[in-house]
Length: 193
Image (cartoon, rainbow, N blue to C red; front, top):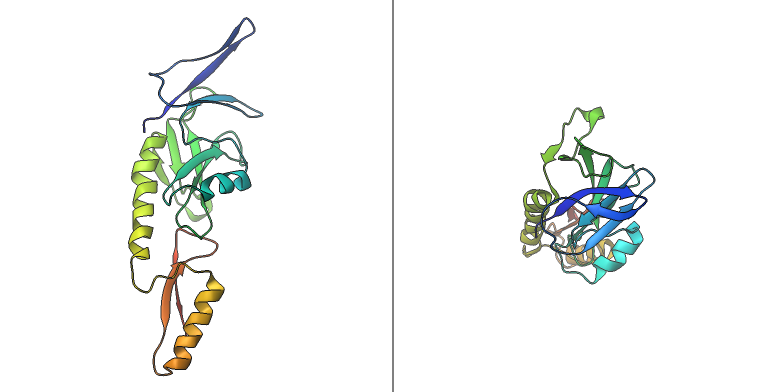
């Protein structure tokens, strides 16, 4: 899926006009307090976290949607469905090197943290984020889910199951792999010693 993102030029006598590349996909006009974006991308949705959670509930694992961020006009958020039962992963994307306020930046940065001295990983468009960040992450989660000790159930059910295994076999150390509740991009090793 190729993204096409361009600037909106508004003139009182004309409708907004987009400039850049061939049109493929749906056209989204994103109006924020500071800018107006035109985004030709099926994966872009203008909505709250809860609205996207509802949309992604029916979507397959690995689906990603981009939305405006509450952090300001220089940010957007990628919402990624990593599992059928777990929470969505919300990834902040900083946009830099913007030619105009209404354009997506030429540098899209994931993971920048000045307090920790992390420069983050730089991408040049949303397709690259999907190919180099989202797809490998989803594939890693799918691989982990194939492990015979991976538990997709809620944490309370996993805990009860492990306690039952410990009761049945006191000499063993029952364990399970499961998605982290607050950070779905991480796995937890749950065990009963």
